[in-house]
Length: 99
Image (cartoon, rainbow, N blue to C red; front, top):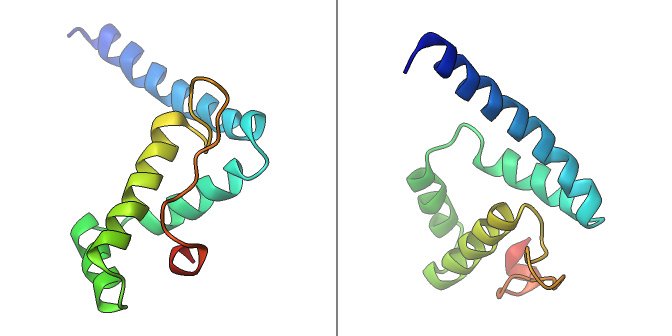
């Protein structure tokens, strides 16, 4: 890629991520807070160490997988609503385990 193409791709990615954060406010009331919680949880941490920390606190493997599935769905849809059909999705785990 040329220098101009690399710059274009870099700044397009930066603008896309900055603009994506506005979507959370437009889709649902709770989306911005969920985004901040997930960012704080995953920021600057190794995924495997987070998994080990969860298991050491008594979280079962099934509950951890359900949590990761919910977070993946959240980031994939950029909110807690499916990107089709205006349907909200919730975690499979209970609120006591989720917290």
